[in-house]
Image (tube, rainbow, N blue to C red; front, top):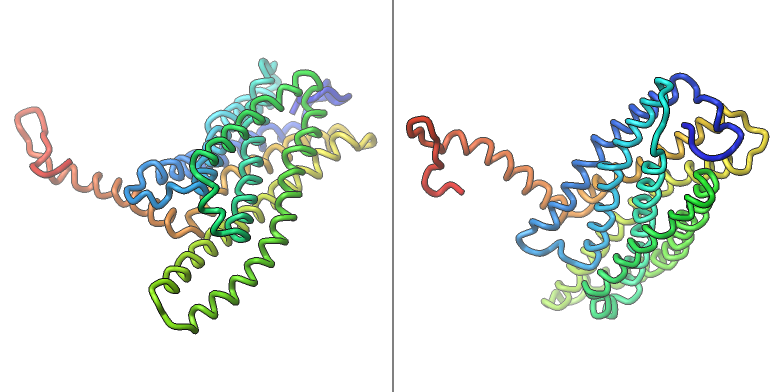
Length: 323
């Protein structure tokens, strides 16, 4: 892809590479948009408010940033790469760069916020529930978006390749350091909590103990899902990080290698946005129930509407009781 400002700018990409990248972007868009839209819909339509917590506030913030990836970045990628594949001039290439950096910075910073959230919930459960209110979570989310919108403007000064280096050493590296530090602490706390849960199960089954066991099981499910999310983060961002370093530091690499690294580091970052929603459905019972309810409601409406309509001349009105 003709990004950046190095000596490969005037060298065309390999013939098939733009079409491969466009096809991958299309597949990821078809995965990213419905998955993240379903996450947002599950939280907004939750009738029992079980998903209205500070943790899920960060989750929906992550889903919004990933939804921008699916609705803006990936369609632009398809368009730009097809034009490049047919050797057409690329105009306004900054639009895909800026949308990519803004949404992906927001995505990785939200993962960092989720990491701190889980560490606090495990290490200081009583203080966590009292201190992390929805208002404070909103302030943190607003700060994440402020940084995500302002930091990428450095791109206009330094260009694509140097800014990927900035992105790799700020947002991605910061999230990675936070993840490793908090994961080590969370693991120790989780082991201590497991011993406490076993003691509660073996003690008298009072209502208070049963409530503690339910709360502990809930936190454990969330934390396990979060660990899987961060494992996915490492699988997607580590190869991208390596390719960014190759693009910026390898002076002996051929232009073929640079072009492949440019496109593939881009695709690896987009993969995280497409796969995150399936982690929620797979690991978190409340999200899984919300997804099933939404999909079942839609299926029931599709089946009930034709059966419960009464023909009145050239019009059809709903049968009584159907809403």
